[in-house]
Length: 194
Image (tube, rainbow, N blue to C red; front, side):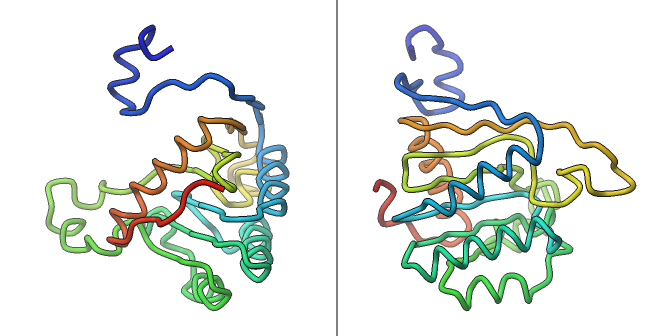
């Protein structure tokens, strides 16, 4: 398939993969039900990355699910964007860290670049990726916040899309996360496959 899509393969810097199953998740309720189910079934590791994370109803459900898996011995990595998640209280992140979850902001090591570099505040990470055990991944447009489930009076109904992928493309999502984690922390992920 890579030969049929050479430009997209070069842009993504990852080959196309056959042998995947894909579920289209058309709204926040369906997306987070699927993600939370995947988190609950994790056995080895969870890679969790979002541009926006709020400390609201869905944010606390996500935190509780990640903490439960960490307490069960699952290795959990939590990557957020400091600008997108600027309202996320330190207590939320501390709670995750205290449970053994590895937590980092995207620009943790690059604060000077963010403030003085050519991109300044626009240098942020908009990805929304969850990878479970290197076998299942969720990627799309939803962030972690009640407004993405249509529960915010100002926003009303929110329409966005996520996909749930099982197969080799889930591992490709893990590689994308690993690259961002290394940028943020300077630490490579030791293990990406189950």
